[in-house]
Length: 96
Image (cartoon, rainbow, N blue to C red):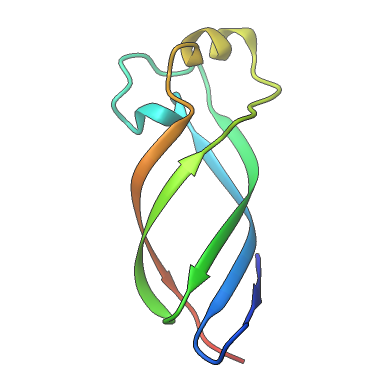
């Protein structure tokens, strides 16, 4: 779900509620040597800028706060980066 604000005819600023599931520390992006003994479901807020409705994207992720981890997950997460650069994506939509 997202909310867009259109300051000009072509530019849109977006705030969105997002959710994701992962099985290893986020900063390792599928290259961790050790997986969690389960999965993490997380909620977050994204902020973006858009000028076309069919567009590839690159995300730069940073998560300063992670809460409610089981102790066994926290031990695996310890020492992993709290950021991930250059996550590819594709956004599409339509204007109402």
